[in-house]
Length: 174
Image (cartoon, rainbow, N blue to C red; front, side, top):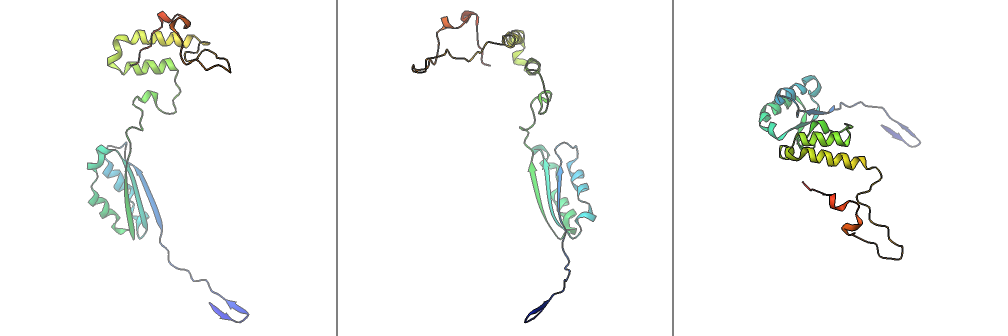
């Protein structure tokens, strides 16, 4: 750049730059996480680059990753960071049939749940029958409180005599 009073000229000077790469790999569903991780580290992508390696794995896969081999594969990079992240197994549905994005009727969901609960097999028929009865009563609100006057204190509970068919109604918490 040249500076003179009333006149300035400049010239563009290109500079070498480093490529920044983020490589993200999900290892949680593979049999051989080490092989997939090393395959993702392609030399032509990481040569002289600034690399951030993020890989996701389950806790039971931790001992399958040879960190020395991963560091060795990354030595051709200019600089690198490694971020292993554990995949929460709580995020996966306990019953795959009831997974996210699946639309299932309430009764079918209950049947699936009961199929997987050995401790409830003895009372499965009663639970399904009760659920069918609950779903059949469209207008009945099981949690509705009696209406109260605006000026009066709201009623927080009712007697068994006020509940229709109270003597035949049973609620089990499992």
